[in-house]
Image 1 (cartoon, rainbow, N blue to C red):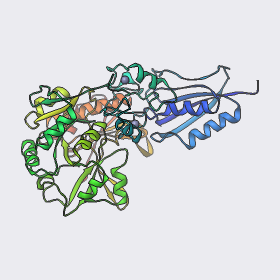
Image 2: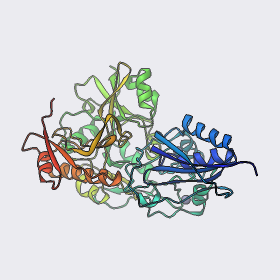
Image 3: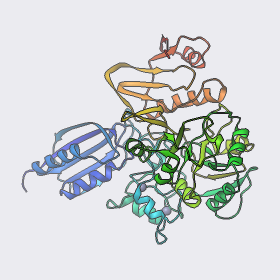
Image 4: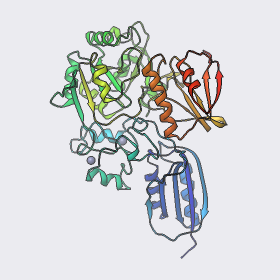
Length: 486
Ligand SMILES: [Zn+2]
Ligand SMILES: [Zn+2]
């Protein structure tokens, strides 16, 4: 036998839930290498064995062209004794060590999944929970690492034989896609009336019918419930505004496609790129004088916040309607967005005429992000779904783990460890019990998912802020008071 070497490789960064193991499998088997790949708490670990030049080629490709959704921060490798084992396997996830892996943000439905949903011959035709390794829910359904199905809210859905075959087939786009499912085994849509009783018939068709009649609908999304109404119907938008007690803050609008966006607003190349990006934020755009939206969508505002469909359910609903809808956070006044099914009817029953809901739980409440294109740069106004929890890289690593508790209005918090700053999703104005709970649950969630234990806690100097009170109540940490500046 010719000379063989065996390399161990550790890949760190956002490398779980982004198709990294299938990618490594395809690359290694394509080169005829033996070995294994798996997830652990730090990221993806790989062992490859074969001719020295082939192992070198493997490492070069890994560095130069990782899978598109991955955010590789570090690749470290070294040589170990060869084992002579033949074949390449995907091993189970190892657990037990310190958790360092990073979780991916939620990703908008990809073109391949959309094509399947539109194909009457496909088994996922018209299915509202279609996803694959390149798209689908992530941050909002994960409650622990490693990112594997048992650590997500898909744990309760047992895969059918067809889905299991895709999940285990290294050549399939759904190879190790953790939220994989289909109409036979996955979540189901339901349409409920304002009292929580099920309405018979196709839920998407029923929702479209109620919206066309001027109804206000609660629609369960990725990070919480939205409230929807036809954007062009003044009576529906007025009803929504009155029932939500939201006097003049602008509502966001979801449009079926880019052409519909251009009928409402001027869209330049940078704005188009933002609208169609995987994060699918609400993009603030200059509104056209002839835009057909009800006056109360964004009273007295030159700007309109538009977004494109980002879940299969949005695509089905907007495809059916063919017209823009207001899609605003499902809450009353300044409370955080409703995300638990048991809260939806009690809290939104006075606003919504009906509920388009489903049985895949949301673990982490997350609002839509709001972004503006400014001189060719993306200017985040509210950084949340689609961006969180991607960390920001610090110029200088922090020597101890830090929690920044934030201030009060438009609140976010931040956890920092080593060279990473994890800025939280948008929490809201910390003025009531519900937002305070959202803040404390968010801190606990980040601490668990990233295995962070703050040693230093920074807080605002204002003694009456709820974030300050929270910081002062934490035991066994060093406190630092900081004056926030506007
Ligand atoms: Zn997909
Ligand atoms: Zn299935």
